[in-house]
Amino acid sequence: MTDSGALIQKILDGDTEAFRELITANQRLVFHVVFRLVENPADREDLCQDIFVKVYQNLQRFKHNCKLSTWIATIAYNTAINSL
Image (cartoon, rainbow, N blue to C red; front, side, top):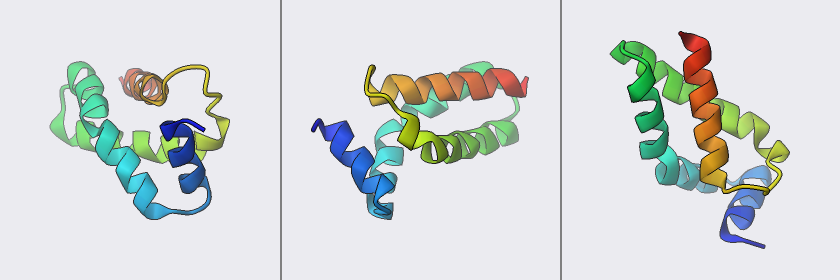
């Protein structure tokens, strides 16, 4: 199992520290995507939180056919675009 696979499994098993690790590892990526697309600072913060909620809710659907960070960036991009 890959590092991301092991991390995902821990999160799915209810390990909140593992989810915190996922957020820490991908926070800059999500912020970068959102900050480039959304002008309002309050909306940016809300969107970043919404994105990580979506990641958590859909983690069991991650197919491992791309990098986890790519999947998260796609969620960030789509969420930001849909908010405009």
